[in-house]
Length: 516
Image 1 (cartoon, rainbow, N blue to C red):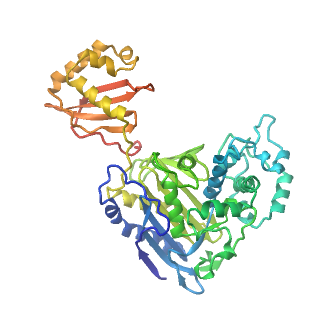
Image 2 (cartoon, rainbow, N blue to C red; image 1 turned 90 degrees about the horizontal axis):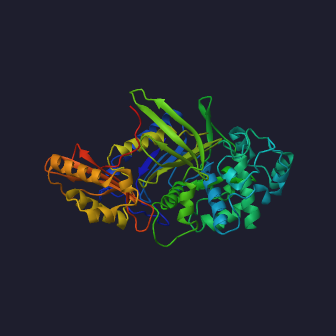
Image 3 (cartoon, rainbow, N blue to C red; image 1 turned 90 degrees about the vertical axis):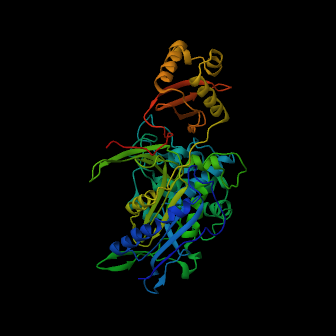
């Protein structure tokens, strides 16, 4: 099988981000040293798992900086996979559906807490599991909190359902595994209903609304819900490996359930779509490029329905943790290495795909394969580990407010030389009730006696705009200072900690840690 590997910049619309604070100017070059390892990880998997064709990419600060391809898009013609080959992405469609719902919400045409039956009358006759169950809401549908039973095996085969058939299904009723709003349970049916809401609220078919209001404005010309419209020379065929050979899976149509899994796209388009979501971070001033405002995209990428946390003991010792849940059409998690991971996978007979990105690091991965339920998870874990080993996978650090910078200077002067007037000016009304002013003054004197004169040249490391810490190098050792400002204007110090430090090195916010 042919293997082609290449690196390139993102074609089409740019969604470039400001580099992560603390990154070196050559961060992209440093991260690029991991690309051969990433290519090896994916190609080895392709060979051992008998994946006919796959394509993958690495996104850094809004640009597709590396792509890799393997194999063929059609085992009969042996046409090679390229970055322009179009694959089905199955459940990754759900984030496009969620974006459409939020666009309608932002336009004032619906509320996420509206009852779903307001927009889909067929739901009015639902028989709820208990008399005190809440009515199903749009938010329940977006977050897999409907109480409908998990339906992956069934849902894959519903893409051909017509609107009339879906109407009949809803009128027959939907069984509940739990009352709405109590638990996370993945529901393709729920996202199919969201597609119907888009249709009814927008006044045009879901497929047309997504195309004209989302895909076209983003320049995603390879992304479509209309499989027959894809040029045959660019279409990846899907296969399963059975009886020591590939067997082609029959293509699935896009019907009334398309909102849950009917999308097709290319590597370039998928990378541009992920870059658009990544560009919502960090929150900032400036014009909105649309078609969905940045705050709504960030809203999609936060946990709105928690899922079961997972932990396992690693073979070499230590613990691997993953916790999180579901946002709007996206999975959101936290691991021992990364405090914010956004992702979604997609699987259908003949296909498997995944997108995963680290909003605080400005780095993302995308991949698509033409084997039934191509399993990308462990490969993405290994790829992120390879990027981490470069030491260039660093998070974007919060920036301090002017108030925090000013208070840092005032607190530093107070530590160096106590002044009653300055002590009063910096303090919120709780500061000397929590620890008396005279006690704080004595503790500062004792620290100066222990450490000698201390300098003010340590950098301020912000946890957020109103909380930060810094290290003051001294004649003997160092001091570590932490402050939090109060929610008043002007902000004053509500929390102050000054203690001996073991090192003069500045604070370095690290990743989430797990018990060893």
